[in-house]
Image 1 (cartoon, rainbow, N blue to C red):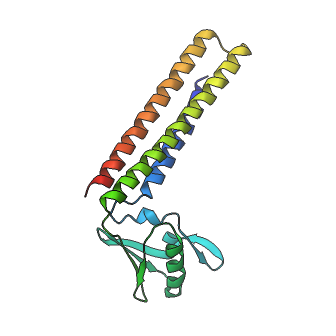
Image 2 (cartoon, one colour):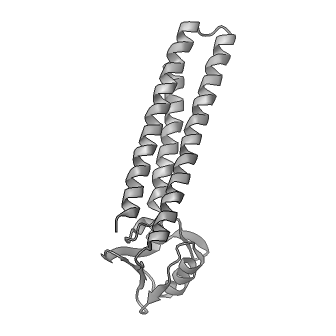
Image 3 (tube, rainbow, N blue to C red):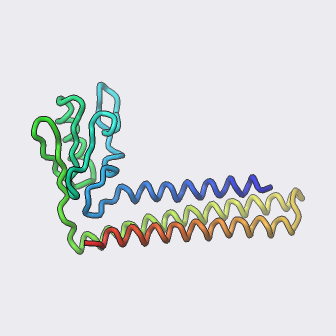
Length: 184
């Protein structure tokens, strides 16, 4: 009986983890190497993550430096960065690529906060959908007389508590990311 609740809590946790991952790709005016996590570069015919073919460092608060293990990859890495939605122009000196982050304008910060809130709302919807699925499964078990009315109440309460907890976690995450973006 409790195993079913944990199964749904696990799905809710995945929604929260996914949101954390999405937030790490939203830049807040500071250089964050995680912005490059989704980029793939063709390395001997295999799309490879940038981290596996180059050393990525943050020498200054608003700069990321990418040093490929092989210098012939510089052009490919530049193409991938330009084709991405990062909005950054890579500068290369033949050995490494530097990405300089411009200071965010007030307008751009507000747009990013809206984006953060939109993604957070999508995560909350996902959590609530998981709660609905759990409640449907509980009702189905009750109809087939696998569980009693009292057990239904207990399980629905547990699911609601888990939902409330994850929605609160999403709200806290959203608030923190919004503050980070709005901090000049």
